Picture (tube, rainbow, N blue to C red):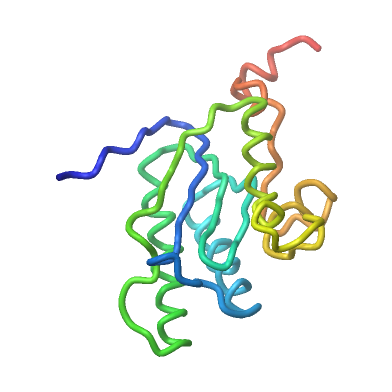
Length: 175
């Protein structure tokens, strides 16, 4: 049986989830999280991705991205997942797949739901019972996005993105 096709929007926002194979831990120590974020940052720059929110959990990753062309998403995720798998297998002397199948992607309607999705992603550690205060979790975008932290990974969600209009339309609006 063939796998279902992805739903694509050009341009579009997507909630992406990738999980460790057999729900195994993909991040065993602090350095693993740091290396993944470094690979994510490089891939983001290389593929021209806007990253609005992220959360790295022990056995899975959530990303909220905005892309110009849907076909870029697979290349973006391939470079992240392959790069991190090579690092992980070398560090832990393992071989084979680290990630469970292909990543999942869900198109996100721009507007209010975009903010709700970012909040959902960042609050994963609370729902998992890891922490009580999301501001204390170092592997999510919450501090950058909500506490005006130093923007090193995430991009600002533009007003036009929330209104579901493009920049040209936004500039022609009379305020």
